[in-house]
Amino acid sequence: MSVGKKGRILVVDDEYGIRTGVHQLLELEGYAVEEAQTGRDALAALERRPFDLVLIDYRLPDIDGLTLLQAIRSREFDVMTCMITAYANIETAISATRQGVDFFLPKPFSPEDLIGVVETLLRHKAVRQEAEELKLAHEASLLELASEKSQTHSLVENLRDAVLVVNRSGEVALVNRAMASLLDSEEGRLLRQPAEAILSGERFTPVRDALATPAPGRTLFDMEIGERQYMVSLSPFHSAKRDLLGHILTISDISEIRRLALEKSRFIRTMIHEFRSPLGAIKGILEVALDRSLGGSLDAYLPLLDRAEKRLDGMVELIGNLLSLSRIEMEKRGGASTRPIDPTPVLNEVGELYRERVQARSLTFAATVEPDLPGVCVGAEDLRIMLTNLIGNAVKYNREGGELGVRVSRAGGEARIDVSDTGLGIRAQNLPHVFDEFFREKRPETREIEGNGLGLAIVRRLVERASGRVEVSSTEGAGSTFTLFLPLGA
Amino acid sequence: MNAQKRILFVDDDRDFLASQSIYFRSRGYDVLTAASGEEALRLLEQEVPDIMILDLMMEHFDSGFRLSHQIRKNERLKEVPLVMLSGVATATGQRFDGEAEGLRRWSQLDAFLDKPITGRQLLKVIEEKTGAAR
Figure 1: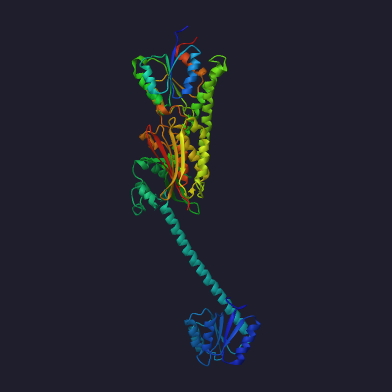
Figure 2 (figure 1 turned 90 degrees about the vertical axis):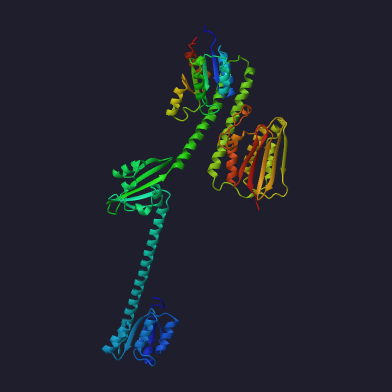
């Protein structure tokens, strides 16, 4: 019910006694009641606010009850109507019914009659309203269902995996774009074709075999087409009553996953080699010492033991680098800070770290930072690791008495950090590989230099994580310059 | 007592070469070392050792195989026992995949041993292959 405690009723009668009597009676019953003396007043009242029921006297001073009814219907007020008249004859009843009156109450009537009629009509209205709401809800859910269906359809259509649904008679019931392209065809041409015919050629033999003798559950197997690897899944699907309706075939391209897995196992292989070499060396040295191969004096073994210690340091560094790599890998998303930092303190810290080694090799170290440079968008710890690796390399691969320079400047909208040395340089053909994991240039001059080939790989990953990049330029025998480009803060 | 046996070690790990040299020299062997395949081939132009111990993974993952193949092409070196050391064979869970087995035949190896290896273990192999058991 729209308004009032039990409903809102409009009483339309020009006869004062009846109008007020009905008004009072209904108000006592808990209805909200308004009065109108004429047809026009009644229409005006209906325009003003919604009513649940209009009680209309057949005889009104301006327009008769039938005309009022017609006006109410034509203006589509959502209201129940009841005609009250003393001239209860068949013709008026028929005319009123034609105008869509809901009830016809002849005068005279008892209060009980009136209340009974009002209650019935209002109940009808409630039922009608409820039906209307149900209908709307039903239509809405149909719409929703249709849109859900189309969503599901476009979902399947745009899946990266190739999907084919085959009905019980082995015909294609559904096929998506990825499957069509895998079959070098178009979806429209594949529908309702026998699955066996469209999965033609030797490359689909395992799929045809699986479809020809389907297992009761899901079948999974790998397949190769050309250079690419696929995982094939074939599952039966059933109706609610558990009748077999057909099969769903999906073919997923797993080449990239395979490639990553292969890359990972290559990485592990190399890593194991990188651990076994120093282990073998240390083991050999210890064996010689325990064996007293060089006699009883400890001094004879000191150079060897010194080497063993260096090799152990190398292993500790390798572990540290491997941990850094795995940390970067795990933090890839959202790990780096984009808050701009001042690179100077980090640069000073790393410079301090290498001071002794710089002096030991008689290197000239020069660091400059462009004044008024806005902050650099990189995590301070990440920058420290990058500079440690780059400056460490510049020290290691430099020539005795050479120069080492670090320059922080602005290049366009980016910060540019150059780390340059005057050392061995890198052969041109090796430049594309220097950032690869475990890559080390094997040259007679590099043989004595310790390293595990992970430092630059770490630098590249860190700089890329900060949305920057690293570049290298080098001349064999003259030196190298590594350049980091990083976003500048506002 | 046999004449002094001569061992050639080829390995890019200089510390390994150093310890093996000391270990075997202290046992009366003559030890030659080379830190690369190239260096080994140069040395072998003059020398014919009694046994050669090669590291598989030097400049490349299969440097040892290439080197042994080169050595076997030389008439003078055809009969010299060849032992290959590898640090990756057991680590991958498969001692030889099909390809490596083919490579082993191609390079005509006498033994294939895992690294890290001790002088003690090597000594046994060397004595056995050179008939130098004393």
